[in-house]
Length: 228
Image (cartoon, helix red, strand yellow):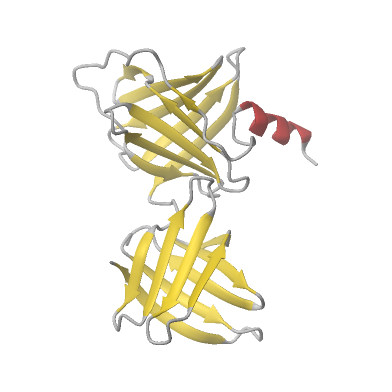
């Protein structure tokens, strides 16, 4: 057991029970006149860490992080903002810990994430990319026979909901095994000895491929599905 890894996950707040912690500053930080917000969902290449940057319903710039292995999450708001040449720094605080997002406008599909402990030591350093997060939404094949809904629950659990419109049969699966081949990601859900495999290429966010394998490993279904 890697004690250091467990300690690290604990101090950055992502190994706690899957209840989002919301930290809100008393007032929003002063923003530069040319302030540019990084927005969207970013993930590291292993897809263990996902960060969502967005403006909430109150107009507050927010940071939401998921650990896809533990299912725990952390939400922070109102960062301090600074700028160095083309890069913007958004520093969110959780107690004496700092979560710093670096965003270079020349690379709009990437961010760097740093986490600092109370002593100022960097305890996490990850490069993250937009589009590498899990596909989400409802996808349908050309015949509208197969419908697959993919979504992330607040707890961080990734859900597959499949339906055959002709037979009316439905299936819900959770927590796939994730692998990567070149630019495509494979999400393999299991139902008994059957495997349901979703193939996703971030270059085409509106499409997935669905494969189903029987207990002998034979492919019994192959369908292209498009985001509805």
